[in-house]
Image 1 (cartoon, rainbow, N blue to C red):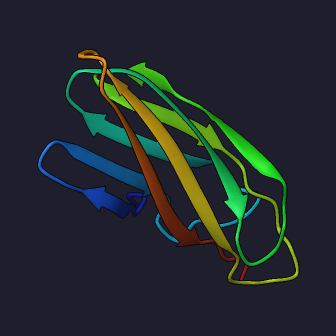
Image 2: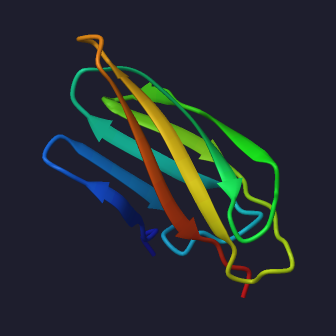
Length: 107
C-alpha cells in the first residue's frame, strides 16, 4: 500500500510534502522539499499545543529533492499541533523563510 503524503506548500517553484500524511508519532517521518536552484535547507520543529523542545531537521539532497527524516514524540495531546520553520538558501544568494503547521496523531 503506498504511503500517503500531506502537501504543506505548493507554489509555482516550491513544493513541500510530509509523509506519511497522517503524521503518526514515534514513527519515521519524511519532509521533502522540491525547488529549483536551492543551495541549502535548514529547519526545526517546535510544539505549539505543548512544549516539546526543538527538533532540528537535517536536510540532504537526493535526486534533486531535499529530504529530512525525523521522529516526533508522543505526548498527552492525541492531536498535537507542531510548527515547522524552514530557511531555504538559493544559489543566487536569496533566502526564504517558511512557517507551516501540522498535526500529529497517536490515535
